Length: 347
Image (cartoon, rainbow, N blue to C red; front, side, top):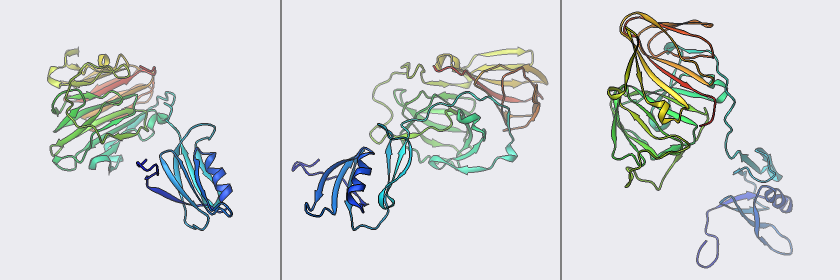
């Protein structure tokens, strides 16, 4: 609002024939009438709402489509008013779908690569989305150098990234200066934590897992990173930021020839999820963990098989989601697998 009291916001011109019916339609969707003229035969009006200024004109023959958030008694969806005017009411937030664990085997040869956010290349590892609850992607940088990324954050229940190869420079809110994210490392970024990918090496590749499958990425135009202050242990939605450096993670021998590296996700996520890197020094088998929400495997390198209610043969860069039940992972020497599990409860 300017000092002379007039609204200086950019306006959207809206067809309004008949004018009265258009005003009534827009009022039902949260807009307020500010001006109408001329008094003896109204043909124009000004309405405001949802951060918009609308200029209604009975003589205007163009089209208009407005997108507004849900509120009051108006249900989400597309609503058509007089003159073809459309108001699309979007939900305030998408509810987390119920758990729907299922067997999904995504083979490297069967999944195409497409360009996604910030110029990165994406491969879908969970085409079914497990009922909309999960998304998993194999992501790589198209070339080395600076990444066209901005300071941003995500509305998620859980999000983690595991580095397969290469290196990137990442920076996170309240976590200090940029740091190197290398092969075998894992980061978990709690909901709403601002971050940015600054640059990546040629051949940089990661696996990213997030819930729910549909979640917005919001750009923060005001925030600059790194933050002036540090708060590395601050809890957000019961979670704290995690950068698990591969060489510092504790190792346990599951059998004399199968090693598990705990990536620290259980503590950082408040007990919601676990992640471990399995490495087969020679041929062998190991019983897999069980989970009532997500049980996900990604083959970083090598070959093996899943034995259980639904068997599968695995190769490099294959991904598998498992339902509840007993499964045995059998591997040839050199098999390396990322295993992630998540509980259905909310943290």
